[in-house]
Image 1 (cartoon, rainbow, N blue to C red):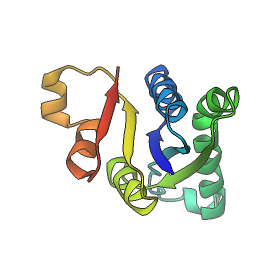
Image 2: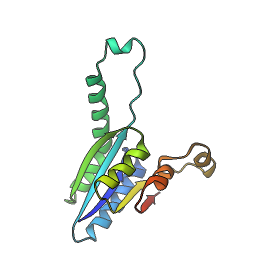
Image 3: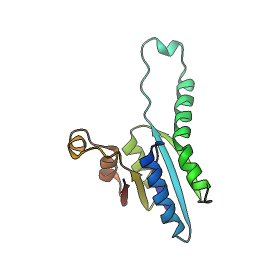
Length: 142
């Protein structure tokens, strides 16, 4: 089975990556697209922890992740494309590369945000970090 990982955040760029991955999957004998949204929870602030439990925070981020994958799931469901959806927590590039390795993905297809070269050099983008960490081909879709 061809496993294709597509990190999604609900953006148009991510949805274009989903459509590209869907084309790749249609051309394969057997394929599954793995949609992944990575949430980067902020650490609690003083005083807030008395009002909000860790469970409440975890549920909030899980809902946010599910909402971020909703359009992508609909794009794949409309054509009956085999897919799975996961919400992960942590550093985006590290989680994406780790998930790809653990799930034996053959490729990562991800959208870019279109930041200029200078911004990428100074700040580094998730896409650039995934390129550095991933052990499999990464296709960037504009």
